[in-house]
Image 1 (tube, one colour):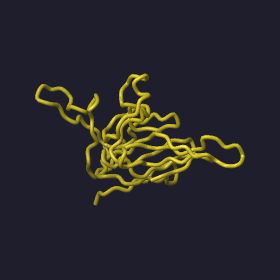
Image 2 (cartoon, one colour; image 1 turned 120 degrees about the horizontal axis):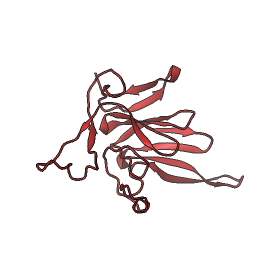
Image 3 (cartoon, rainbow, N blue to C red; image 1 turned 90 degrees about the vertical axis):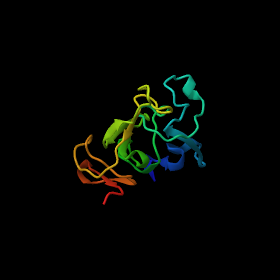
Image 4 (spheres, rainbow, N blue to C red; image 1 turned 60 degrees about the horizontal axis):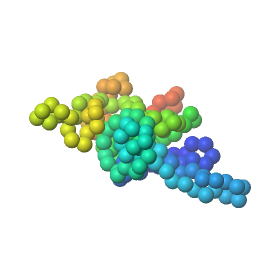
Length: 171
């Protein structure tokens, strides 16, 4: 999915790379736009909490984490929609969640049920699962933002009165 914000910005759900990409003008001298594609959120750095370390490229990897673009993780993001304030709403398909990304690139979980993913025999988080090692719970349940469940949400759209419409695989 893709959505625009303002005159020269396009956001794209890069599903297979588990990222939200931003396309904008590198410069516009009046004769046209030189497009630039950049990672906006979804392990844009190396996926660590150290600012210096995040300046290096991270390989695409599915996962779940809220936070700024360098550490936030998605699992096969699908459709997205941008509101007038620049908030990007994302159908995080593989995580069974609806996520929101503000104009600064900070990602939160907006709707869906989240649980502890699991631990190894020693009680430590599973390898490759950054703390707090959570995952979305698939299902088909209406409810408030934290108890609702989605099954592979594929797209989102802004509805009337500030609502968000979600398309998922639930029956």
